[in-house]
Every structure is written in structure tokens, then in C-alpha cells.
Image 1 (cartoon, rainbow, N blue to C red):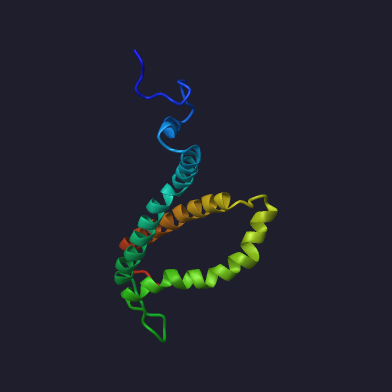
Image 2: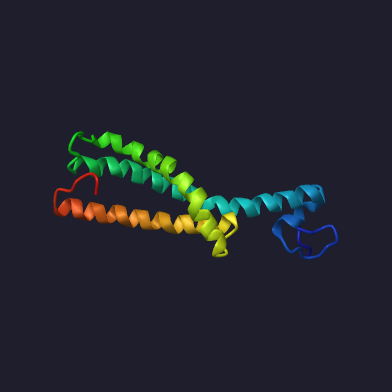
Length: 145
């Protein structure tokens, strides 16, 4: 019995998209395979951004349970949303000038490796947020903690 999925030369193909070369051009199939390989790399980013946005909203809830008094000013809970972008503005030049050159000296030159380190550090920040939540429920913390 013949399979209804045959390639141009009636052999088993290496990739499942190769079977579509009967209907579409070789270039289109190869380009589609390349796009799919890149998309697989970006799948964890959706999860990361969802968690990051959830963490930002969690900061507001945490700040409402903390002491916002910093002496001359009182930080309101809804102002904690601006802390994330503020950290980006402050840390971006520091990373460009010091951290990325240090990573390149350690052999971490590709963006994918840097992205992996960033994902690992994101997990660390989520754990820090969990620790803050734990200490909030034990006592009344300052928002500067």
C-alpha cells in the first residue's frame, strides 16, 4: 500500500516539511524550516514576558503591604510600576559598558547564550520577589528593601 505522503523521488524525507516540496518550491520550504527553527527559540519569551508583567503587578500589591516612607518622601504602591523601566534605564549603560565585555571575555559571545543567562537571572529575581513576599507576611518591611 502506497502512502499518500510521498516526496518528489518517492523516499522518506528527513523533515516533515520536505513532503510539501511537491506542491511548493524548494526555496519556500527551506525558508519555512528556517523560520520554524527561529520561532522555537523565541517560545520561552512569551512565558518570560507574562511572568515579568505579573511580577510588576505583584510589586504593587507588595508595596501596599510595606512601609513606603523614605524620609522626605512617601512612595505610593502604584508608583512601584515605574521601578522596572527605571532599572532598565539605569542598568542598560552599565551592562553595555561593563557586563557584556566581561561576558565576552568569559566566552559568552552569542546572543542566545546571553539570553540564557538573562532567563536564569529572571528566575533569580522571581525567587527574590518570593522572599520579599515571605518577609512581608512576617513583619512590616520598608519599600526600599
